[in-house]
Image (cartoon, rainbow over all chains, first blue to last red; front, top):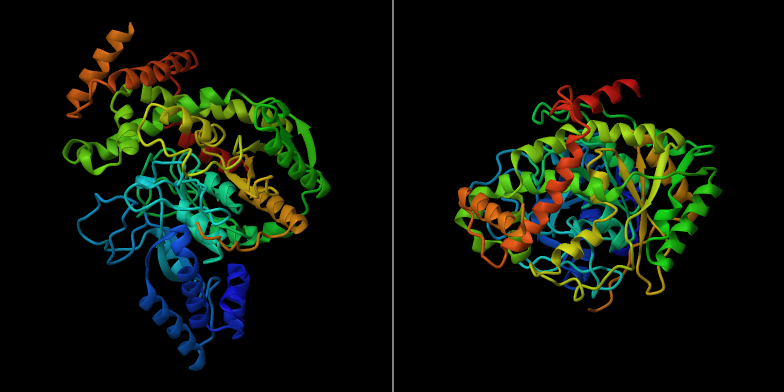
Length: 472
Length: 67
């Protein structure tokens, strides 16, 4: 197999091929490196490589096989790339910023440790929005990440490098985080799948915090099977994170279940508010889901703008608290946009912040007793327009910033407040040959349902193949 | 509060936190806060003394047991 051939495989298939001896782990690692060297100058998805360590780790797996050790591990030899916000022993994650310094991490983030324990080989750290506080993929500190489908366009953020590296076929899946849309928005912009798990399902220990009561860790992948595989390995209680209390489920086992009869709730009025061409792509995706056996039911969703304001009260106040010391001592080391957004949080009163926390279970009950009474999952847009260009969204911290961010986040940040699981799947490309996507919101801990539908959807439309970025 | 009062509040709140906010930024931050605080007032109408600050986590965990 050529490096490009290996780049088309899912993590699930690649690990199987390595376990069976059809492909060596060293080959898999070198293929990812080769692919990265070819595409990274055009998309700037990878910030740092673990070249020598990764090759050495691959060779160690292969040596074990030669010595007769039974090869094991659900991710045996699969190159692992992650947003550069996870602790790894002996390293300092940049968090997409220039302000980070200090002592290297003394332990791996729990999510990384669990993937490594399954045989994954750390391969590189990926571009991200500065402090994960950006939705477009711009990064004025380490360089903007670029969309493999068209490098003049945004990747979405903040897991920009994760989405771009997966879409370009460098790695089959990557690790990201989602506070207000940071897995879902870039997945849609880059034409891949991604899942924001139920809040608390995956440990955040060792991951950079942005806004703790909204932060989640999750995978982005071309193949829904890899989302299920990665989630099966990462989910579950963790003594290092008091919020990670939920037991994991066998998400892979859910993939074969038919979605026949499953009710998908759609607020058609919402589709009328977005660009007609994108709405048309969403209707096509809905037709595929119906063809798979799901039943569309009409629902009316509660006001998303209210939800977004609750989410903002939490996000702004919590992010500003984390950054308070650096904002006092080193404000010049932030980009204008991030510094400007953090300033807002210092003006949130403690009372308003606490009220936004207290009302949260009541709002979730509204959704569960409202639209979720009629439907098993809810279908919503992600983008309200075609993926914008880097130039047209290059607003820095200027006056148009707030409106631009609010427009891009209008379907993702509100749902983050609910804490429920949400999966994104790609639609067909639009008239500009750019990807788009839709999100499926599930009840708390309904990841198995979401992944089952996603698998059925991809069984009909196919798994996205790696794209070869044109010269920018 | 008037816009001017809002801006004064924002200026003093950030000063207390030791954050330097340029005079040109005050109106924008005040506007954002006015919008969010209005939401806070709507929220309050749904709350009573039984709605706990940790209710979100309690709710999710109870849902896990039910599902």
